[in-house]
Structure formats: structure tokens, C-alpha cells
Amino acid sequence: MWDCYTASFKSGATHTRSKSTLWEYSSVCSRLTWLASAANQFAGQVPTSLGLLEHLVSLNLVENQPRSQSESHELSFLTALTRCRSLERLYRNSCQIKGSIPKRIMSLKYLNWLDLGDYNLNGAIPSTITRTKNLRRLYLGGNQLEQTIPNEICLLRKLGEMDLGNNKLSGTIPSCIGNLTHLQSMLLSCNSLSSAIPSSLWQLQNLLFLNLSFNSLGDSLDANMRTLKMLQSMDLSWNNISGEIPIEGPFANFTATSFLENEALCGKSIFQVPHCKRSCHATNDFSEANILGVGSFGSVFKGILSEGTLVAVKVLNLQLEGAFKSFDAECKVLARVRHRNLVKVISSCSNPELRALVLQYMPNGSLEKWLYSFNYCFSLFQRVSIMEDVALALEYLHHGQAEPVVQCDLKPSNVLWMIRWLLMKKHTDDMFVGELSLRQWVKASIPDKIIEVIDDNLLKSEDGRDAIATQGNLLAKIELGLEGSKEFPEERIDIKDVLVKLHMINLQLL
Image (cartoon, rainbow, N blue to C red; front, side):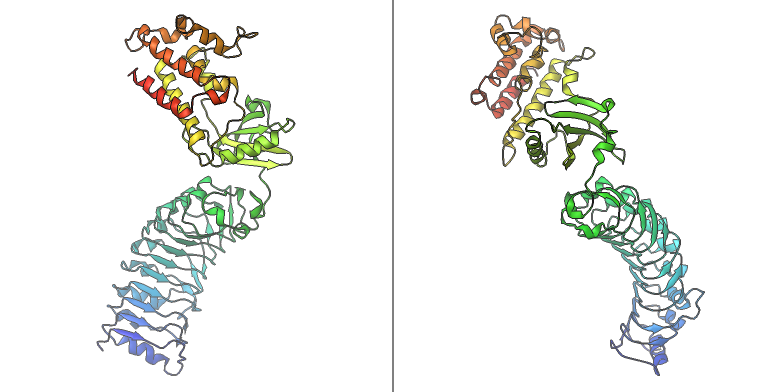
């Protein structure tokens, strides 16, 4: 045998009479590590003697015309290659060879690139694929492969590219697919895959290209889809997918072609799908049994989305003057605010018959309910903590935005929030009639009658401290509340200063 190391045959050559010479020449090179004959027209059978090239690292037989030894058995030349223990790359596509993938080919532990695309291969993907733990690129597209995608494929932790498209694969996408954390490209189009897209797929943060088109995938879109910030291209067309198409993250750059022929999808008009009407369905057509509260511009209902998520749906009363303007202004504001002390906006619904905001559901109810509950009493320290959290949210709205958020619908109950929480009285109490208001009553009680207006529960002993020792602290908070509730807004203390003073007052309690 010859001690040659590489063999490359000119691309585009046509070899007919000397076709056997090619294989014979290659087979006698005992130390051959690289064999490339891409884009030629070599015909005939590939000899099993290639398996004698034990030092072979790369074999490229792309776009030739060899024929199979049998249309119903494993490809013997591939089986022979299992003796090439050093083989790392095997490229051989666009060959009309029938047969199944030899299970033994998966015993090549150094194999990192396997391209058997457009082979006309049949049968199943071998479960022994798990043995090729170094596999980074797997191309089996354009064949006649059947049955399911084996769960063992999830053990290929180094896999970066996977093409199983244009086959006859059925069943579900393995739920363990999220284990392939290095995956950048996944092509599963033109198969017969069904059921839901597994939620673990949306954990593939390195994914750049995803094609699941022309299958029978169903169920609703997962909200976690929007977290795939690296995603550049996605095709979910020609499936049975339902739900709302997100507009956040990478979806802002996608077009209608990514979602064609999924009749149950809804979303923005740019995706050429119907507007979502999930608010009505989620709230059982706005049943009174689901009502959470009523405000000046509408009502809030409890709802359940199709994926089981609890939400609060704020529906505007369109009969009220200024309702449309209020809704548009609120959407503009809430679309850009992000703060841990503000309720998260999930989505919105806007059409001639309905204006609604879909909000994060707060299972513990409103703060108002807890503050005035007869079954539960907040301690002074708890109220102090709540005050600071509310002040932080207000400071963010006023000063944490490029354009300050103006609270146009400030009510007495909003302006007097700090005072109310210390007195446990509402501005609507029966005692406040005529010209007497909550603010006037409190102001008249300072400083000598402060004990008469403070909530009795705050005058009890806390952590071994006599309540008298906290009177000065409570007085300082009430005075700060009076500063923030003056009749004219321009006279009120800025929320930044409120936050600083409130923090200093609270430090005295520690």
C-alpha cells in the first residue's frame, strides 16, 4: 500500500471508464487521512475496502452517482467505515442510494460532522446515535426516514446544527430538546410531526434558525418564545398552531411569512392574522362572577387564558367621555414602564367594540382590601415598608422615564395615601361632611390631639417598645403626608424628596 495522506479529485470531472481506478487508488493509500471527490460524477459501487483506511479523518463524496449494493439492506460501505476509528467528518449527500442508516456507524466516537442528506435513505434514525457524543453537525434532511425522532438525540450535548427536514418522521418533538443548549439551527420542516411544540424548545437561547413548517403541530404558542433573543429566522407556517403571536423580542422583525396557514393564530395586523379576542373568552364574556373591581373608566375582570394563565382584564367603558383618549394614553405609558412595584401589562386588545388591557393577576387582591380588612392588621413596620414601595413606584413614574408619566386622574384617595394608612380612615367616611375633609381633620389634630386620630393598632407595643416612643415618628409621617396633599399640585412636595424624608424617618424605627 502507498503512504499517501490526502487525495483530492478535481470538481466537475466525469469519470466513467476509470471509475474503479478511483476506488482502487484510494483503497491502497494506507495512511490516507483526507479523501475528497466532491461535485464529480463517479458512478458504481463504493467498495467496502474504504474501511481499511484506519487513519481516515474526513471523507467527502458529495454529489457523485454511486449506486447501492441493495435497495433493502444497510449500506455496507457505511458499515465498513466503522473500522475508521479516527473518522471525524463524513459528507455524502445528493446520492440516490436506498437503504437504512447502519446502527454501527454511530460507534464512531470522534465523528463531529455527519452529512447524509438527500440520500433517499429509509427506516428509522438509530437510537445508537447517542454514541456519537462529539457530533456538532447532523444533516439527515431530504430522505425517506420514518418513525419518531429518538429521545436519545437529546444526549448530543455538543450539537450545533440539526437538519431532519423533508422526511417522513412522525410523533412529537422530543420534550428533552431543551437539553441541546448549543443548538443554533434546527430544521424539522416537511414531516408529519404532531402535538404541541415542547416548552423546553424555548430554552434554546443560542438558537438562530428554526423551521417547523409543513407539519401537524398544534396547541397554543408559548409566551416564552419571546425570550429567544438571538433568533434570526423562524418558520411555523402550515401547521395547526393557535394563540397570540408575540411582538416582543425577535418577533418584532418577523413577517407574515413565518406564520402562514395557521387559522387559529391571532395578533397584530402586520402578521396578516385576525385580531385577538381572547379577553372575552378568558373572562367568560365578562361575567359579573369574575369581576374584581370597578374604576372611574371601567371594570376589571379575572380571566384565564387558553394556556391556563390567570390574568386581570381591565375593560374600559366606551360610553364615558374621554374613554378612548384615556385608553390610548394608558397603553402608551404602560408599554414602556418596567418596575417591580407596578403591575405588569401582558397585552392589549383594541377594536371598535372593545378596549381592554390584559394585566398580571395579583392573587392576594388589592392593597386597599388588605389595609381595611377586619381580619388582618398591618403592623407599623409593615405599613412603613409598603409606604416606601409605593413611593419608589411613584418616583419611577415621575423621574425614571425619558418622558415623565403624568397621573391625570389623581383622586383624594391617591393623594392622601400616606395619611390614610396611618389613620385607617377613608376620605369618604360619614364624618367628613360639609366643609370638613380628612386632610382638614388631621391638620387640626396636630400636634396635641395626634393620638386621637392615629389608628389604635399603631399605639400598641411593638417589639417591646412603648407606643409613646413612636408618636414622634408617626407625627413626622403625617406631616409629610400633609405636605404631599396640599390643595394645589405645584405646592406639593416632590416625590423624590418624599422618598428621602420617608427613608430617614423610617431609620428611626430600627
